[in-house]
Image (cartoon, rainbow, N blue to C red; front, side):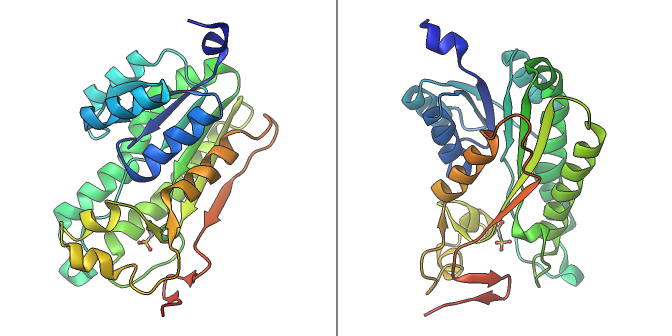
Length: 250
Ligand code: 8X3
């Protein structure tokens, strides 16, 4: 191992197998971090880890044992990016698929809590820890059909704020990066159960939705401010999007 690698700081990114997570792993590696790529899909994170000279740890954040194994594999941690999450469905509240809502709460909120709890000792021990939670404009705005996802992302915002209060005085910063419309390979496709046409319609006529790399750039910026600078929250949207219901389309 070279001196550089022994001295480099460690970042853990959940949901690193695609989209914002994979782009964030690349962005942090470019900043000199040793990146631990965590996700369920082993093949994908192994390929990514090989590309960025990082480490792949297969992890399902909905499973306490799997999260404990991640923590055991990561004795030191300077930056944690809680990125894993997502939306399922667009059902109205009066038609709510309660199991889908439960799943969204589990992956977006409880998963973040599990991983944060498990890695807090290592973040504390680093003497200068940063936690970046990937929220959403869905944690700022309500929209029809979004209830299960917007409720979960509002919870991400509030858990982030709560943790910041609780850790005040400790050498750990807690941030939220909240993207609006980001065109990734999987977000809309997963939301619409693999229906490519409905997924494509989300971005129809929108001049340049954000890319995963745009959000990764913001996350890497938040994670690399000087120790005394805490970025509470950063909302990032494409120019074409002024609000949930106000998206310019041509
Ligand atoms: C994604 C933003 O508008 O699809 O986190 O809910 S939105």
